[in-house]
Length: 404
Image (tube, rainbow, N blue to C red; front, side, top):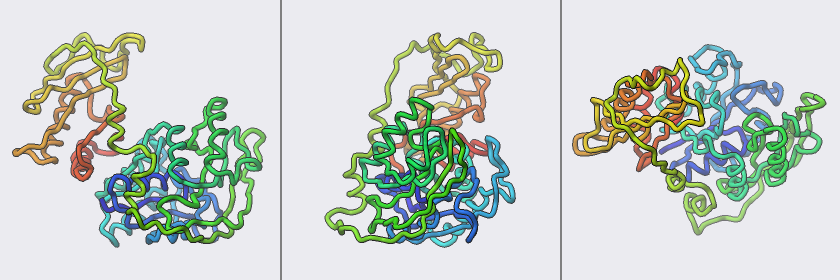
């Protein structure tokens, strides 16, 4: 898929680009949102990392890719769980940026380094849905300790350029590399519950080298700025005052994708290996309200009880396949086994449409709606089909479809 990468200069957006390359996607350009010229280095943004933005131009040069830039003129106005486009919100600056890229080059996907923030995910997906683009977020919900170790082992070299949490001190931790901060973050996770990858805003980074870079970035001069001298959680950052590019040894024996695939990173084929099958007693029933299952508003079984498991047999059924299975534990629901099979009478879009209708009917039989879904696990045989699948998936939701 032809892709533009949203970058902040940090480790997450960088490593997600590496994942995109490993999965066969082609990164055609980089895109960045930054403060207005001559404004303060760090904006109070709910969405975007702006500290370190002065080094982004060299970041693009190091990769040999064009860089698209949009000034952040909006602020955080629509801060609720869902996002509906609103003039003056900073999310609309992201829309303008990606629209400009799409108008200029033929992109299909957007690389995004989100790991845990639903706030960011919902808004990026809203923008991409409006533009007909596919979000590629390979780091989503990864175990943060495993992920940070993986980044380090795969050659992502980054410095800490901002700290803003209890247990982190600007005078001690600014300028450290990922391998140096990891032991401390593990300790702070145990002590204070901090996010190892900094997903709660605990720290931010700037990548100065990685396998995607044709040249490395030398950070020659910085200025330490103490934003808040709080006794318990001081906030400080490094303003990048002088950076330069340094040559790297030329790698000619392998293509970029071959190089990335040679690294010890979690790849798509590894995900299925982690799925654990659990055998539970199953009762078959037609899709319809089960009188023994209390409605969600009335409360349900405690977490210690085994879930009730039912086989849904909806009117809309995928011929020749086992019907979906519905499980409930308290107020937590799960539907599994909804499958779409491409055959002579159904292309991928038609098969996905049928699968989504099956899911909708199975949920309806238990007084649930598509809007009640918080997460979907989607397994597909070929990522080239994802765009078509995603289009059908999005069509079953009015706004902000659940993560998949």
